Amino acid sequence: MCRVGILMLPGQVPLDLVGPWQVLHCAQRLSSSFEVSYFGPCESVDWLGPLRLSGMQPLPESLEHLDLLVVPGQYAAAIDPSMQQTAVNWLRQRGNEPGQVMGICSGTLLLAEAGLLCGRRCTTHHDLVERLSRLAPAARVQRDCIFVDDGRVLTSAGISTGIDTMLHWLIRRFGHELSLAVAREMVLYLRRSGQEPQLGIWLQGRNHVDARIHRLQDRLTEAPQQDWDMPRMAAEVALSERHLRRRFQRLTGMSLPEYLARLRLNMARRLMQETSLGLADIAERVGLQDDRQLRRVWGRYEQDSPGVWRRRCCQS
Image (tube, rainbow, N blue to C red; front, side, top):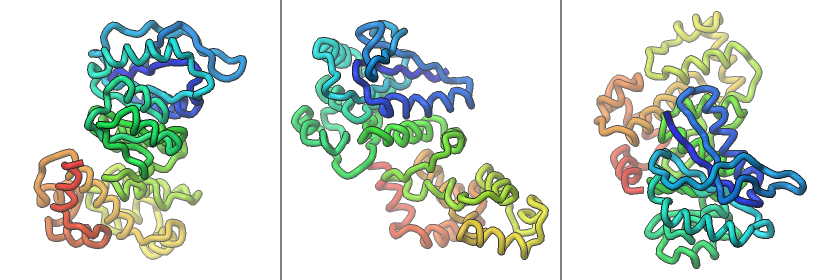
């Protein structure tokens, strides 16, 4: 069971709250291993005009049971100073207990006030970057990114980027398959992050309505490591090889070998990030003959060598 808690405060920006929540809701529907709880300084809070949110639990006395604590942003004019200070004091006491903490937009400012960003890379909405720097002078504030993953603490620029951040967290926690399923359920592209520059290939080339080609792309995405020669792919969709080549190129803008190579390369990147496997083992797992073939495919899309890329990922 993965347990996620959301801190509820007055005036939360609708998409800061609902965007990440929708990702969790989809993941919860697709996987029975999620439990989401909502808590705050009071049982109900003002939200949008006459609308109120209610049913919140009291602030927990411990957060050690949580895998992730989410702190959405708020509209400044709707902030209740008393509740805000209560939340900051609570975060200062409990913020280091969950497995990870995620600040969305101005929610990052709450983390800063609670002293949770010291020495960490972080970001927030571009209008709030200077304030974040003042609140957390020992933090390494990033100004040119949509979200930052600094291990225990994730922060985002807010609004729609809270969705990207939660999808990224799903990838880190559960692997790519669940995140891909959620993104497709929400009709989203998985945006690129600093360490996953080609992540969009999982959904790239799918802006068409051909059911057969979609079915083949699903099969390739599910198992790019398998032996996908042209006869097998053609049989998968009941088309001749020649017809499939032409149809795939016309609909996706790339050839089938290129599409498959990029899927395999993305799987290789993920294994390089998440495991200590050598290149030969990684090549075998992604369906390439050996490490030399992996390096050749890598060289088509990356400027750095696999070793340099991997070291950079480990340092970030």
